[in-house]
Image 1: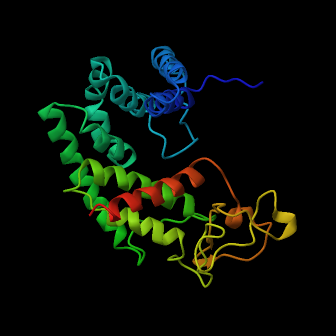
Image 2 (image 1 turned 120 degrees about the horizontal axis):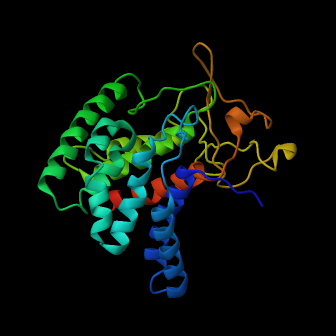
Image 3 (image 1 turned 135 degrees about the vertical axis):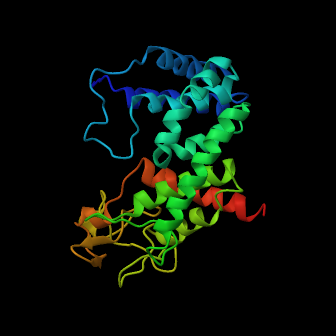
Length: 275
């Protein structure tokens, strides 16, 4: 058994358990209660580490104070208790300063925090962020910011789409739904390179049916597997080969790659069938 002290992982778990508690209520009440109890314990226990766990680790991961934001939002939505709303309001300046990272969480919080000053501050920051996103969108023909590294950018595009959903739902007059839909289009084939296959194996008229998973030695695929997709061969050659051992193009991965894709499809169904 491996253990660690990692504030980001523990606070992320707290938020996930608080959300799970809501989902389980009425279906498995004892388990829902356990989830909420553990979420509260983690929220109370996790302190700022001596060294910021984000150092050189993940450029999208916020500094420690903002690591508490998502957990606070989930706990507030689950319990309605003022401790969590106070914590969120206390992060207003940090949200503004890091709006490109956590603006989607700021948007989520707007419906929960009944404070005009807080709302005005967050909405102003979101308007500024929308301007930046619009500028990045104009740099490519794909309708979204696209800053590829050497490996495929599909997973980052999906994460961008999920965040855009929350930005649209929290501030629909500022953020449209189009950016989220463009992210789905990108994953399903509207991306650079001669090979315009969907990155989702078995989904789309043409998809990645040679991928890097437990199946790679068979030159086969796992239906629903989400690959990272088209890689960038420096300086400017987009490549997506049909070869099972190129993990930087065809690797399957659980976590955000899978959950983000499923989330985006369900979100698109909700938005397109309610508008």
